Length: 130
Image (tube, rainbow, N blue to C red; front, side, top):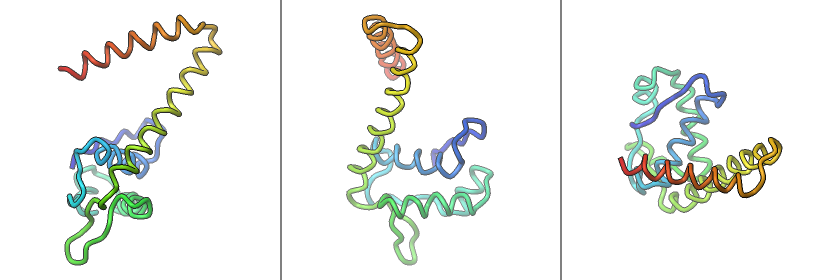
């Protein structure tokens, strides 16, 4: 697939899989009806325990992102993109809130924070254009 696991980022491996699959659905990398790798294939590719992949896939099924097709495997559920986009926005909003709280607590005023945000937005645009 297209997943990248970081063992030292503090997020459980199965959570990383769940988030990355949801992000892929949200940005259209995975579309409704697309099949995901089998548990064994993904575990081998990521060099992790198959139970970890199975746990992530169960979570994705419970969240309505993946569905089991008898005799075929797991595919992306119809309508999953909307919920994945909503969740992605929620996660980003929470991270932004944490950063803004930290900025205020460190003594920065609103104009300084806005200047930092504008600078980072421009840098992100340049990076995404590469």
